[in-house]
Length: 216
Ligand code: E4P
Image (tube, rainbow, N blue to C red):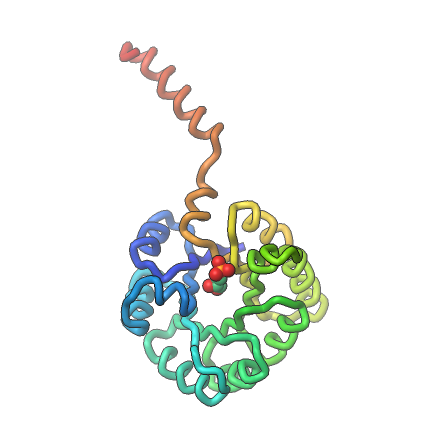
């Protein structure tokens, strides 16, 4: 399973990218708004940091408007992936993008049927939102299992991005469920590096080394 970073903050993206574990970035209008910067400028800067798929979301609600935005965003850089909300209009826009060779990430997926529809419309990626389902007492990871099973049953090559990740356990469970990618907030990425026994182990090694070299 690949890891994408779920943020529009370029400092976080630079820091995560320097770890060498990030294959792409996902943004959304809320994450862009948090940065208080020009949308196209942020997206362009992200493409200069990470050499991989960068999702940028349209805000139009009609297919024609979505397609127009998609064409503008796709012109920024070849790595741009157009994030399109999972609606009937979104499906039309996804199909039109596929016909034009524009990659898409159909977002706000909360059911396996939505994922199947997006895939059949030609989506490059689908993004089931694990955490937001858990928030309302549903089974977010269960959805990843379902989508992975259906896509495998029919050799569907649309990639599953496990999204709305809240903690490291979601990442582990997404990998076990068969997600191709998990898009993780920077905080969760850092949490994934940690284990108390690693810290304890380093402490013990350094203490023993200090004894050997007479620094203790
Ligand atoms: C996915 O691409 C979205 O940007 C994101 O994962 C949404 O997560 P949230 O539920 O934390 O807003």
